[in-house]
Image (cartoon, rainbow over all chains, first blue to last red; front, side, top):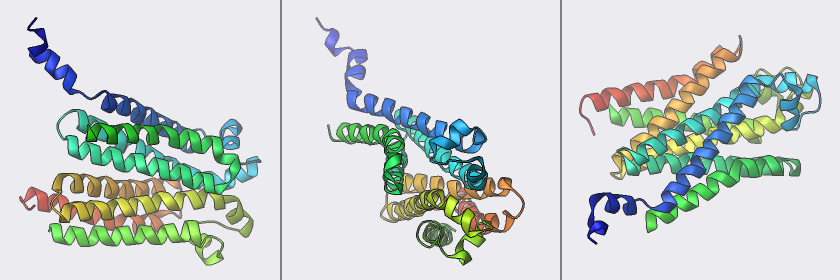
Length: 146
Length: 132
């Protein structure tokens, strides 16, 4: 059968599975950071939200509110950068897209490590923030070296 | 123009390293937390973990800008530009967010935003004129 030589098959096999899986994980990491943005910058008034960030009273939550509002946007920027990177990677500018994905992914992983140094009670939040981008980046690096 | 832009972006990065130092390292000093609109020692202690975290986000933006400048300098123009534009735009957007936080944040917002704004404008003008 000559079908293995058809352009469609060549195109399909040219896409590395690792890059596809990496993209899914980076997209999921961006979604997590979008959720952080929503919680810190939009839903902060809810006690269910600020308790997740280690605060114990309404008074403390009000004190931290301005900074939480700001920090949420930093998470939004990282999510936006990662998504722009994914779009560039899969459309026109593969190298540029990889650069943006790598930078935003590393920032997310490092931010989760910083969170971990804040205290052990943040272990769950740090894992939620850091595992997806770390796994995604590893897959992208594997894809780049295949 | 692009040479000028790289100088201004370097200054913006240096400023964000200073912001990192204030938020994550020197937060206990009253002269530092007063600059961030915090009114009392108690409020500063409550805000401390989040200030510590946010300082690192500013450090990452500074490092990203510097890495972008280095990539651009060694000939990786597209990837370098993407990083410079992303980090400078993030700094500028963070400054705009600061304005919307409330009155009294205008001055720090201008301090944070003016350098990345000028850097981005110079970069765009330079690129539009065909500079590389």
